[in-house]
Length: 257
Ligand code: NDP
Ligand code: 8X3
Image (cartoon, rainbow, N blue to C red; front, side, top):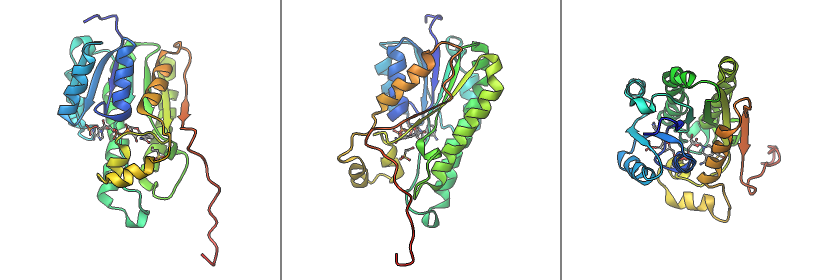
């Protein structure tokens, strides 16, 4: 492997935004560590991208902090210095009101979107610092971390954590030259809604029908832009939405409703 290549470590690279980031950074000449739980998908992505760059693919459930440490400790030498971490693995589960939500779903979102992201960051920080000035952490947040909506309850709250954690990390890391960004997309057409709706394809299709949502590649392009900026430039938060996604007026509940 050419050691001159920068290395990007991407969680959740088996579909959607993570997979698009893997493709985009491979095309830009970065070496990749790609992870995700679905081994078959991961191998497919690795095989597609290996023609473009050096790829180390390893199955990883980010909620398993022992596995996170094991994967990081076992990184091959050529991939051991991490210039970019994209903390992308995440999910929403359910979109009904809080009072009808399943506690198991709430815990899974917290375990994945908060605890998983924190575990991966903690395990990789020494290697990101070793990569030196200009290295970058991109945390995939969401507009849901900023804008409340019915059914957003724990999902939105996990993304608010991602935003604040990103800012606080930036405070501690900037003197080392490490940049941190909360990249916060809006509606992006991926497997996200299928997962959120527990495999209900008709709800998923209806959700995207008649829209021109962001595609995962649109978000990946933003990640590449952030990572390739000069080392003194830190995008703190980048919110990106499709043009078709718009704010609404406040809902006013009236006695007659
Ligand atoms: P996808 O469902 O297409 O991708 C999610 C990825 O996360 C998959 O690769 C999945 O891999 C991985 N993942 C989920 N749980 C775990 C886990 N426990 N351990 C490891 N990997 C896991 O959705 P998106 O690409 O849209 O979502 C990516 C990120 O973007 C998420 O953090 C999401 O919250 C965020 N986001 C999405 C938006 C959207 O509208 N789609 C908008 C704003 C933010 P596998 O199942 O193989 O483990
Ligand atoms: C997902 C974006 O608008 O579905 O993070 O909550 S949204």
